[in-house]
Length: 275
Image (cartoon, rainbow, N blue to C red; front, side):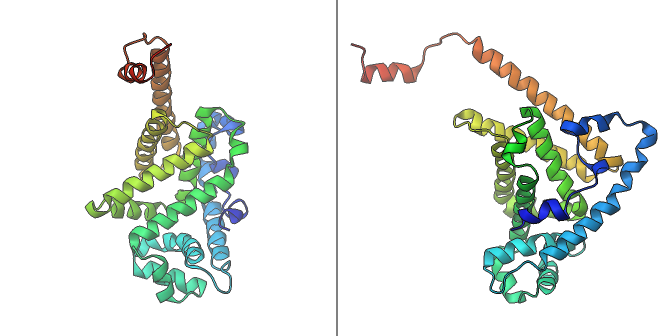
């Protein structure tokens, strides 16, 4: 439901899009052309407002709590810049969607933490709608991951102050386990969209590394005032370069690894001796 609206209401102007595929040529803009990127921000804000208006009117006559949660999440995020992820933002979102405030609270039993969770789930859904697996498959693996991280930040950009408040909430000691869960979920979602099907140790190491890259990039993004978030893109590119070099070293090391004694292989031979 949410994903179907993204391409129509939340697409950003081409001059503010993140670099990938055809967009690589935009990195070659001259310094004189950079100020034009700033004019895309009002366009993004207008489209964000249109998206929120649509979200406020898509609920069915008798919605479930999950449907209410999905519809209210982006509206809460829009108000959270001023009110935080609390009752005031929730009540404002409920009013805009004509949902009973008491029912709206039932959709977020965990309070602000659940509101942040629902907002990030909305970002996941819109990212997947913008870059489905078959579309990503045309890109190289490095480009897939870079594109997905940049798309997430692009979707978060209209509510950057709300993101700051969300991260401050998740940084509270009692919310640390939930923050780790949300970070893992974001990294896992991006890797699955990118086509990763690993089930061994690489499954976990890839997600831990991407989670660290995404988290550090988001910290830069929150304070980035450069045109088109150019500083954030450059930082992300450097981090991805470091990860790619590490992965190349890891593969070379595995290829040159001698056949060392294996305890598991030894125990297996004891149980199933060769004939």
